[in-house]
Length: 482
Ligand SMILES: *Cc1c(COP(=O)(O)O)cnc(C)c1O
Image (cartoon, rainbow, N blue to C red; front, side):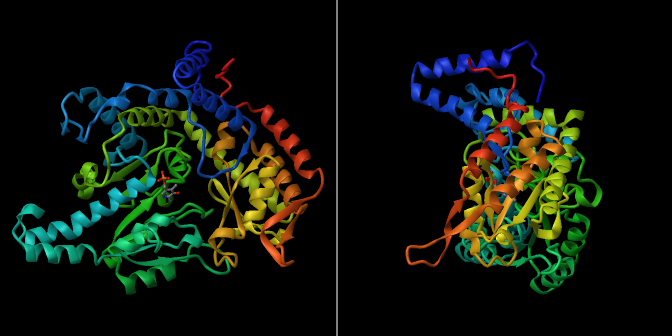
């Protein structure tokens, strides 16, 4: 976390803000206070969550929220955007410098929005533009009805190849129920049945046969490295655009833990991310790209995005400035060290991990060895004050709702200052709860995938140990609400 510029400046700022809010709707002030309390009390292992600094949080709470600023820096559809221009230009500059990217677009409101911008950018550059050229038209408006009909067909007939959901991919990477799986013909690639690792040969074979317009790499629940140089080779070989969604691991790229073949930015034509996961900024998204797509990406708003959120762009600029400080690289390295300690701690106690370990910020624990579903394990751990989420494992026999896995991530606990010894203690607590939880039965006496029972006193004892562990690592130590 950042050092306060004056003692207790953060406390004063948040106390005053709550006082002002209390004057209008006291229940909201109470809920904000209660949320800080709950976050401080819970042992958070949600791999996609983190704790943004007070500076990031404060940058969002102001009159930038009042501005409409559709368009791009210096080219707005509204007057009076000079300060928004300053903010957006600084956020983009920090992003380009931090990631070594040619172009950065910091308007997307979330990771999914960033992906939509990326999809439309590739479609516009590779399908729409050639079609307009063929029709000797400059804009869609210049097309006649027959050209327009043909263009619509062509846009709707493109192919996407992404990592399957159960191998750790994201819904927006071509999952059928998601819009990405409907606007594109989709095919997915997965992991090797034995090792659980990405199978590049199988991916290459699928790409050769399927010839997608876009190959997406990136994940929400894959605990290993990806070789983006190989991904780009495959994409080039089949004429695909390589898009990397680094939503989960952007902080590890920013902190130079992922370099060379494991840094997506030099290899992909387009990279999307969230800003609130390991990158530790405000909730939001971002697109980085090379020169070939910059013009299309900048049309994100109003093409597919609603008006930009200038207050969030201000917070993105602050977070990206933080991520450019050397302390962020230490933080990123500690995330990975902590994840490894958690993985080793669990394995030493007999737990089974998908792929047998981790190289990044997350661990995928197969809870079938405890005789539980992911849903039972998630609920039992929550009873003991440990917040996780259930997650499908490759070829999951319990499907995407009950699942057989628990996803654990270390970015948040690392922000609190826990070290590898602390994460070993966390492994001990998790193993204690799960090994003393039994599955329940349904009313008709069949094994239930949802109900469970934790042995007497175990949840309470573990919750006390978790509270002790957290007490040594206070969250937002600079914030005292009084
Ligand atoms: C979290 C995530 C997203 C979605 O981010 P939102 O901000 O929730 O829209 C997209 N892609 C991947 C890989 C993610 O992990």
